[in-house]
Length: 76
Image 1: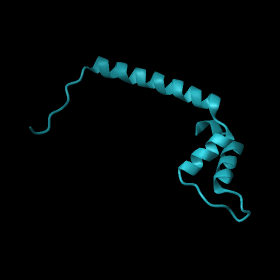
Image 2: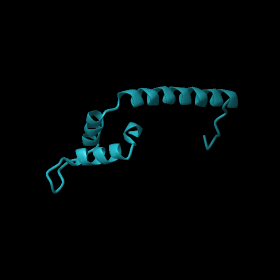
Image 3: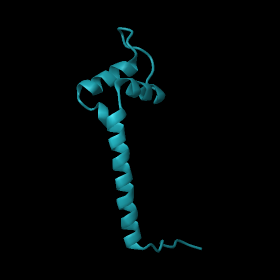
Image 4: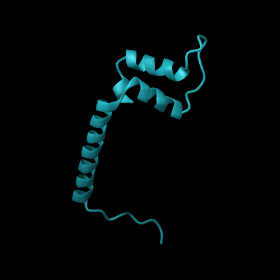
């Protein structure tokens, strides 16, 4: 068989990219409307942020609170 290049229709590839961008934009808009500190803390825990700091505050809370204070909570 060997290495063969894919023969793709450039117009179809461009259209697929445009559709993917539109879908991603709609998903991001939905995220902007539904994200909360509670949701982001849960996601942080699911990603493995565990334990507490020296004041016994959960690390997920510390991280999300810092992100929120910086104004980036809606960016995930």
